[in-house]
Length: 123
Image (cartoon, rainbow, N blue to C red; front, side, top):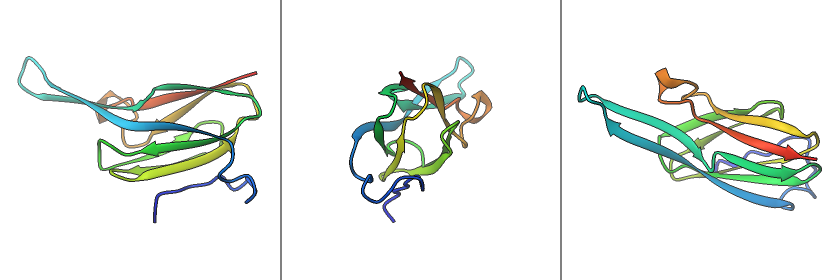
């Protein structure tokens, strides 16, 4: 499996068309004053802007971390990004607003996050 996920509401003719936006998984690592490692994961870029009504193919490549199961709040999209693999989710940006892409493995500081990105749909 190549990690491709497509939202069910898209027709076959729509898949593969539209604008492709590329993001990657990233990681920051350092050592604290106490000698303990500190890690944080992120989506890069962390914010993307799309136009209302635009068909988007969000291509996510896994660079850091083994896997990142995710949801996109408000768009009924879920998927998983695996290291060294591409995951593509396609959606039509119907409503203006800000939608969060949240990694379910890294949702907060206690889990090396928060790994949260933003999709801003502009009218």
